[in-house]
Length: 345
Image 1 (spheres, one colour):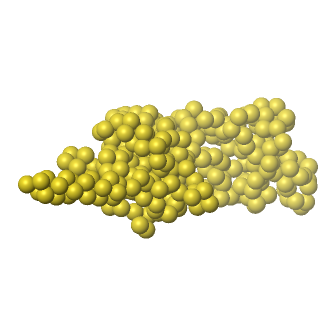
Image 2 (tube, one colour):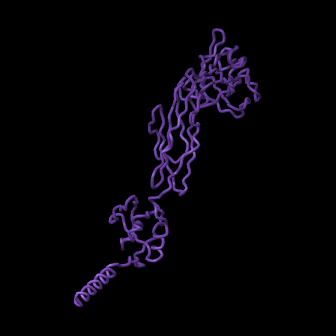
Image 3 (tube, rainbow, N blue to C red):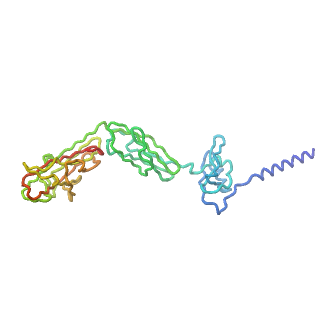
């Protein structure tokens, strides 16, 4: 019996020695291969305490992606070993830390999208001049790029743009449009809500010409030749009598101008290529106005783009008459046309 007790005691001692002998503390990285700090421990279920204590006692366990351990689990707790890119694997963290702590990169705070413009559900939007805009916040202060989806059904229209605006082209009246922003940082992406707006059922455009403009651009030619002679309504350096006002509902406009043909005086005419004009959208005296050739084609004479309702256009006209031309009161008509922004006249 005594031998049995001795045998049992010896066996227990061997087991104890084997157990404690097999428990090796994680090895710290030698100074010469420690290439950077590991990411902070993050809480996943168990709290920071256990893993933080492990770090203070033994240092950090790191490895490179090629030899990274697969995810481990313990009931409903899952996680990854704490990793730092580029540091050779040294020794595993204690099981509890492997199960309950993960790197910051996996716990990245994604950007958040808010404050859409037009606001969600907006109605009676114009068919031109609409600019989508939004706010974005990333608490990690990561760089953000955006994918923009837009249409009657969502279609990717811009990818990886850095701006928080997107300019839309011409829209259809009486239509509901959807839009959505996906914000992406280096570690993941945030898919925003699907927002919508609808356009006006119809649009209207009207052009009101001043009386001098509507009745014709006229020159009283008495001496020849003349160069850059002011039309009667130019009023020299003063405010011109030639102007047009644009009124529009549901759209911004592009404005074009053209002449109806050559200048006529009874049976005599002066070729249109002798007539020029200058214009301004802000100053009726048109100081220092650049002169442009006038043609019979609207497409040759685009005055302004994406202009709002209430825009006024001021004109001055000039005529060069060659020698040998008959004197007289010469005139022609000039038409102004406004179309929805992006349309052709």
